Length: 180
Image: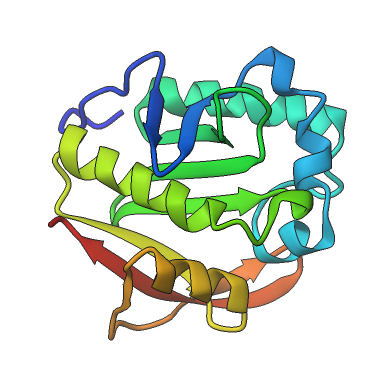
């Protein structure tokens, strides 16, 4: 962890917008493949594919290590602190404080991603003192563009971020939300 970054709390639970964002637990391992083993998630995200029980265990271990390193928070998206419906991420990086999300296919169309992003952005602004949060997404991912728009983000006029993931090229746009 960089000496300029404060550590993240060992436990985090955020609520707002009809959601409870909470830490992933061992009890969630069985639900994770149903949420994340889907062609859309495999295509648009760097998550493992297939996303099976072993991938769920590895993700939980990595989640805990990234939190301890002070770089990333991965929280389960729930409506009541119970069953996970997806995930929201906050990552500290040289290019800024980045947010990300994935919603299980059975739970899409309820505004969960936009609401979770707004709650996580509020945490970043209020608790971490950041001035701006960003989303990096592909223009062709219409669902993510809709989330960015609904969450109040604006497209920045900056160069695309290009690379290759899982054998396919990508070009990411950068969207930003500034501290109110």
